[in-house]
Every structure is written in structure tokens, then in C-alpha cells.
Length: 609
Image 1 (cartoon, rainbow, N blue to C red):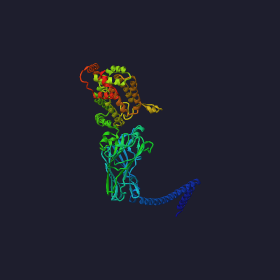
Image 2 (image 1 turned 135 degrees about the vertical axis):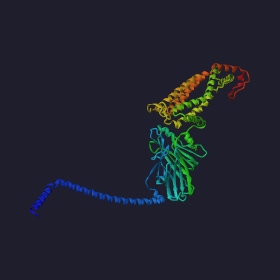
Image 3 (image 1 turned 60 degrees about the vertical axis):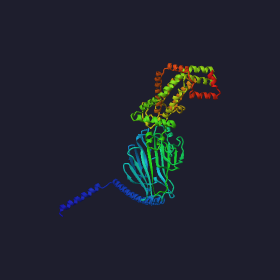
Image 4 (image 1 turned 45 degrees about the vertical axis):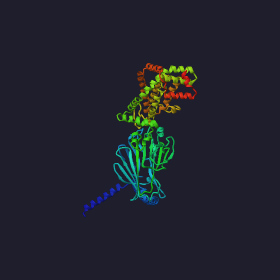
């Protein structure tokens, strides 16, 4: 190496020494580096400790799992493998229903009516996944098996059906087959038991438990609560129900065709082709959730006699309480709609509902439908109204003579009755002619009173100022006031006011026509005022109908008055009184005379006088 190379290497060495000397870390930087190194060491140490802790936890969990598996194996046998798992849901829909199924119990978990909303415009759920438990229960050896404790296998699924299976073995299982039609409110459900004759306790039922913590769907809590209960039907008998005003448990005394979880405007009905066994239990309780209205639970027994294979055909109805839809079920489910007993129910079923359905086929405005329904009914009743008016007019013509008879005999009412009887006979007047036609109209008024508030069609239908014809129309809500709230309510219903005013006008016209005494006149005015408080809480559709009925009655009486010539009636009465011939008595006159004789009045002597 020459002299220049050695000098160059020396200079480079000196430069490196100088560079390292000038760039060596300060004490502060050394401290920072030490802290950084310590932190990394701590992180590595924590990771090692966590890995060890996780290993111990897994070891412990595996030990517990083995222990639990042993317990489940001892309790459920071959079903133990289904006692643990992960819940999975699937949804099936048609035009009306959205149904959520779950493998936890192989059951229906939630049912939504797609085309309806609650009064608050929320989704309308007839079954809520959080409030509607349902499961099968049966006795197997010493164990009670509940189907919702197990995770069922999903066997198949398509657009309209779902099949779940709970297997003891390939040849021993329970199967749920659900079928949803493309449209409508029905779900068919088949429960199949295969090879369980050695596992299910002989002659013990398989119980279908079904419950619902019924949510509030409508605006009026107390009204919906009062209309929510169980309906059920025994074979060859009419549908019956549990009290709506109190909580109770009812053990069914006979085989039962169907059970309905009935709400104000909707219901969930469970129908069995072979019927539910005697001893099934229905129970109503306070709601589990304070926001709901009532808790309904049913234990429906399916008879099992140890058959190697057995299929139970069940059908659900999840839908509105609409008379036509319920009638189409062909199981008597329409009887859950309170249309009235006896003649009132017949009038609704065979006159009012057919007319209403006919009009509904052409019109969508329910205010107009009620108007036309009123006109049709009043037109049908017009002959009775006409006859009543004529009879009342005849009685008014005879009133001066009747007053004279009353004044002449004063306190002798039997003599007054007999002379009035002779007067009616001579004049050819039936004193009940004005009352009977009006009485014949009463069943229709009562039938409408039953039909309108329960008609699903009026639900959430608006007309004029009423936003919902199924509840009262409030033009002013002034709040709850002592006494007033109990008698009248916390609001003012305009249709009820109009109905009351029109009733007072009609009463005044009727009093003028009949000439009632002062005492009866005041009583007749008092009744409409009392009805004001009663009807103020009723459906707007009902008070609107009664208002229209009064208005049409005014119009009819005004028109009849134009056609009835009272001078001609007087002439007819005069002619009848002077007419000679046999004194043939009407059945009514004969009954009056018999009553008088029973009281000791000699009608023959009265006649001679």
C-alpha cells in the first residue's frame, strides 16, 4: 500500500470517528429508547400471559362442555345433540302475510299482516317474536319434552313451505310441515310423529302450547282490552267465549274444533281437523308487558294413542275479523263477530251485511256507503212508516172525544177504557196501529247498533272530519274532568251532537203529531239528552248512521203529510161510525173486553147505555 492510500484510509477513519462522536444519542434520547424497549417487553409479556389464560379458559370450557353434554345426554338421550346449537330464522311471505320461522322449536316465531297498520301506523304483528311463545310438549319416560328447547333440522324450504324435523334416530322423529298459500290469511300445519310409540308415554296427549301477550293495535286501550278474549267451538254447538271483563282459566269440557285468540279487529285462530281433546285449557291474565293489553295462553291437547305414525292436521288463520273472510273459513269462525242474538243477528246476516257488501263492491267511500245503506233500509221501512203516520193521524182526530170521555168518567179508568174501545170500534181505528209499525222497526235499529261498531271495514276509514269511522269523531278533546269524564267523556263528538239534535227535532215533531201530555213530553225530551253521553264514546259510523236515519225520517214524514188528507180521514171515520151492519169485533177488541170483564166491568151494559 503506498503512502497516499494510507493517508486516505486514515482520513476516512478519522471522519467516521468524528461522525459517530457527533451523532451519539444524548442521555434524554437514551432514556426514551429504554422506555420504548421496556414497553415492547411488557407487551410481549402480556401477550404470553393472555395466550396462557386463553389456553386455560379453553381447557376449562371444554371440561364444562363435556360435563354439560353428559347432563344433556342423561336427560334427553339421543336428543341431546339438538339441545345446543345456533338459532336461525327464515321468512316466508304471500300477499297478506310475512311469517318468520325459527329452527329453535321448529315453530312460527312472528306473523305480520303486510297490508294493515296499527293505529300508530306501526307494523301490525299478530305474533311478536318477543311475546308469543308456542311449542309442543309431551311425556317421554320421566322427562317432559318441550320442543322449543331443541334446535330442529331444516329438512326443506321453498316459496310456500317449510319443513323442520327433530330426530331421535332416522326412523324416529317429529316433523313440522308448514304450507303458506300464495294469498290469503291461512297457514296449514301438519305435525307428524314417526316411530315414537315407544318413546311417548302411552295414552298421554301431545300438547300444543300457544300464547300471546296481545299488543295494543287500536287507539282505545280499555275498549280493545274489553273486546280481547278467547272464543272456542265444540262440535255441533255454537261458538262460546271466556268472559271479556275478568281474568279466568277454563278447562274445556268436550272435544273442541277451534280456538280463537280474538282481538277487537283481528284474531289468531287454531283449527284442528280431528279436534283438540277434552281437558284443554284456556287462560286469560294480566299482560306480561305493561304496554300490552292482555295475556292469552292455551294448552291444546292432541290425542295420542301410541300409533307408530300419526299426522295432526292443523290450520291457522291470521287475519282481520271481517265477516266475509271468517265465513269463508267454513268452521263457524264468523260467530266471533258480535252481530246480536236471535232476530238481531238474522237481520244483520241476511239483510244489512248483504246490502253493505253489495254497496262495497261499487264504492270505496264508506261515508257514502252508510248514506246509501240508510236510504235503502228506510225505503224498505217506508210502508210501515206510512201506516204508522195514518194510524197516528186517526188517533189525533179522535183525541178530543177521548179527552171528553176521560173528563166525564174522571177516576174510573175501567169505564174510560171501555168507552174508548167502543169509540175505536165505531170509528174503525186500531189504537196500536201507530205503535206496532214503529216497534217493528226497532230490531233493525238494534241490529245496526250491533253491526256497525264491530264492522272491520270501517277501521281507519276517514269521512269528513272523522279520521277513523270505527271510533268516535272528536272535534275537541278537553281532557279528563271529574264526573264529566265518567258521564260524557273527555271529548266532543260532532256526529253524536248532530244525532242528538236531530232526535230532539224528531221527538218534537212526533209529540205534535200524537199530542202527548206534558209529563210524557218532558220525558221524551230527556231521553235524547241522556243518549248524548252514552253515544259520545261510540263509533262515528254508528252515530252518523243514526243522524242520517233521523234526517230521512223527517223527509219521509214531510212527504207523507203531503199525501195524507186529514179531512178525508175524518170523513172515513165519520162514515165508519154511521155505518150499519154486524158488530164484528176484532181480535184486539175481544181481548180488551175479556180483560175488562176479568176486572169486573160489564161490557154489555156499557154497550146498551
